Length: 464
Image (cartoon, rainbow, N blue to C red; front, side):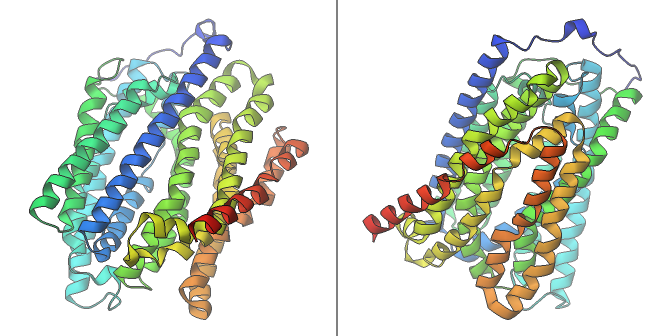
């Protein structure tokens, strides 16, 4: 590897914020929705098929192993992709290749840590140090974690052409890569399930999906080829921005996975499997807004802030308003008809997930502020995003054990669904301080919630 640097691009090279940007945003939005829609159809179809072939306990064990790997990824996230999208040097090959080397090293470290975790789980189970009857004490968990750990090692070699395409809002081929990796994984799982209906079906699907994505990221996307290169200035810039992404990623993991981490030690694998199904149905809605924020809001706001800062407030609400309306509608619909939807999609063994869906849907009220967090990241003030995450994480970890102790599993789910509400007042304050708050636009979207509830009542009546 060589040490070299490259000057930042001249301001005259900035792309104009005009009709081409609007066209790119429109295309990116269409591709994001296509990607999400097709991805969720594949995900739901795969889930429906696998739940009929495999036992609920397997999904509980897989939920724990995936949570562990997800946690490792977030606990070491320095925002390499975000740095490429946000930085003025984001299209510099020197900057890109330095980020790629950091990504490979990170993947190797994560794999080593995952192997140690698998060994620790095995020894803890051998000496009966884990809660008896919990998902953590399941004997198959350590080998599953060990096998899944190879996915993070492989993912380290993924081309950062993916991040470069997102920076440019060129998502057509990115969508094809995401969908092809899911299709190949589904074919692999179905083929394996015909031979052996074990948890290794799910493990094989995860590994094959990662391998496919890595290969396609290098072969299907335009851009400079990745090579091993190290530039000290690029590394300093990546880490300077990434330290706040690191903190936000840790908090994000504690927030998004705290439910399964704590419930895994409080309930058995079967009940956790029911919860994972309910959580998947609700989180699939949150993921589409997350996709829109990652693929559109963040690169668009980054470009606007760099080139036309006077348009930020207008663009901010153009991005947020449709997301607000959709999420408030869906929150009302699921709250009033979630158990009917579960009964329609799954067989009788999974009926317990229905009431869980209804409670968890309340969290969609706060999920609509995802664009706000992306604004803070794009403006280079991620510390505000970190503070908002803290306001959600602390109540979750303080209140969930108490609620479970006094009100059982239902009480714990209510805490999971409502802990995000603690951050809403501070969110409004930060919006006001940054000059992007509009009370009228905040209030105009709220009637979508009762409208969704009426629709949900209608669905419940028809399905009931």
